[in-house]
Image 1 (tube, rainbow, N blue to C red):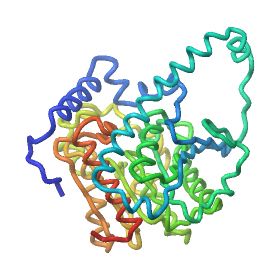
Image 2 (image 1 turned 120 degrees about the vertical axis):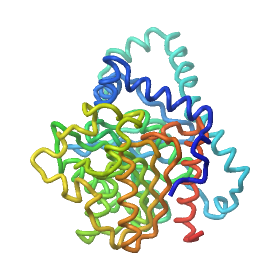
Image 3 (image 1 turned 30 degrees about the horizontal axis):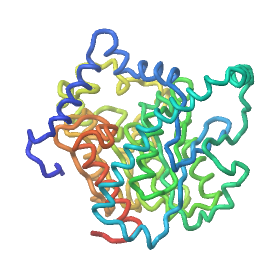
Image 4 (image 1 turned 135 degrees about the vertical axis):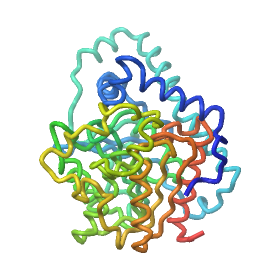
Length: 389
């Protein structure tokens, strides 16, 4: 369904961002690199170290073939969380912006203090970093084991990033994990940096994600308090993982959330043609991430674990699926939503008017992205309280 808004009733800032996205993705030379994922790959290789927002703790787990990053904070008290009202909701967003955008100021201050002590600076530059299977930042008690926390009472968001199965976890997705932590009211967030193509085609990403989910269960997080979320390729992977769990008798999560999910790697949906010249991100070209075949490599693209649009959704938990109206991948979400609804799944599907692929990455910047995150917050609350309304 289309969210209740007139065709042209898109915020001025939303229109501006949409136009900027289209310009960047269609610039000579750089536009090609942006659309096929090469620009993001280069930026990821050169990006600065991510600074964990205040009040949160990040722990990195090296799993050999892949890694995971667990973002935690103060565990919410059930009674305190139940007292959150609309004003708290508004303050949450302001606090979120402060936490994310205030990190650079903290980093600049730290770098200034460091430069005042040249001896310490030299020592830091010559000292090799210690590589372990568990790394933390902003941890007061790094020796404290994860298993010592009361995980049976704690909810977890299991986060699968996008990137066309070519892109790795990068700082924008770490920011997204922080947003999920905030809008959920303090849920732990595990982001899986799974293996990607072309070096690691299917089923590497699926294998890593399932392995990470099983690790989560082994740590003591109850399946009924886990939400699997993902955007773009990560959205498709979210559905594939959930199918795999059901098919193999592994405890299912409490709910599923997808943003602009890529569910049809055959690219046979109607929107691949109808939205070809309209899509600000992938439009007007077949030299994009959407048309790369490195993840499929030698496999049937109609395999539901590759293209969940061809899968069965019987027995799935409640789902929230968001997508932009202008996306080539629009039919990927709409078709899955129709199938899931026909198969008895409790599903909410929203098509955001005038929006583009992964528009939610605007976070709290413009109205449409705020609307999407508000909806996610409401859905998470509904899952936790068991209130169907």
